[in-house]
Length: 246
Image: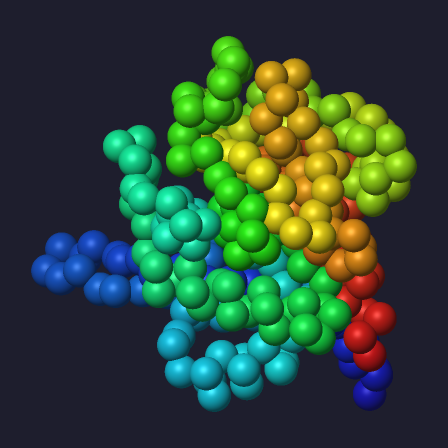
């Protein structure tokens, strides 16, 4: 019998949704298929973590994980960063936000690696004392398109990566084309984070923690593993860090 190779378990933060059948609407917990596939193809074992409020349950779920992926999704409730809701704000769910906060605090306390994507970047930044623009239109200056109307795998704009950053070391470049699907963005980076990439209009496209354990990107690399194969390196980086937990 061949020896089974143990792959690090990556907890993918879930969200609440629903499936509409012809006769009933069923509440669900979900994560997009592309996140699961990106973890699987790059050497990890994906594990969906549904948002729950029972501390005993979420702690037990977290204990099964060697690292975490915080995916995209709905807007972050502005209460997380001490603001009142403004007209451009989209759908929010404070219970999901709180669950994601708890999991990030667990990861940080236990020095576990984290990759945050789009909403994941925004939530972790807000949970770390940073703030967000509830809509890019509220950010000073003129802005390019950040919510593309094309396929999610389409390379829409260029980002500029900070020299010497962890992101530069992973992707081995100072510029790269990405997709873009967001209307909120970072205002002030949270405590312990530094800017790793921006677009020409100064929208923050990546943050990374000073301890190197957390990398946050505003675009969706899980949708670009074929059109821009270097995006696989982001998931491999997470999984390689997770292997060190053994």
